[in-house]
Length: 209
Image (tube, rainbow, N blue to C red; front, side, top):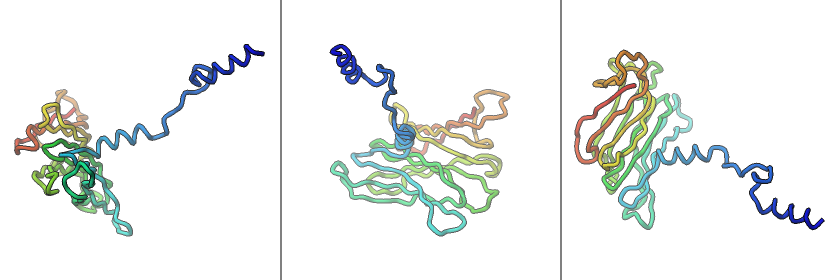
């Protein structure tokens, strides 16, 4: 009997998996939520910024506003503020943000017209963290005369701290793109690179694959 009690005690003290049970599982969606937060939130000069979109209630066709928010905090020298980045009609935007002390970079896909035949494009902007104003406006479109679509554009700042990379999916060719695999007919993925994005207007380069 004493040995049985000891075995029960050891089983309770060990992990559930070691005793034949299941390990504690992360809540469904928690990992995805963390990844999404990493793509839509960042810090610049002590302030936390996040990009978000919301659909205007009761408006048809569906209309989405894309905004940048600066949160008030003890480490931020400026008050809470919000900036309208753009508006998308009849299309749910894909959004992304990357930031460091040089500035805040934001991207979002959108349709400027409610027409179902219009393609989606990518807006790319550099926002000053202090004044919440636009420093640089760029964009990406695909297809002849914008007949294609840019579906996403996730932002990352390279290790040098100044080069911005935009990576996503598309339909149609982006002007000036280089195809990595000659002869490929898909090329639905792209990487656009902007050297010195926060401090210059150096043109981008684009590769498709």
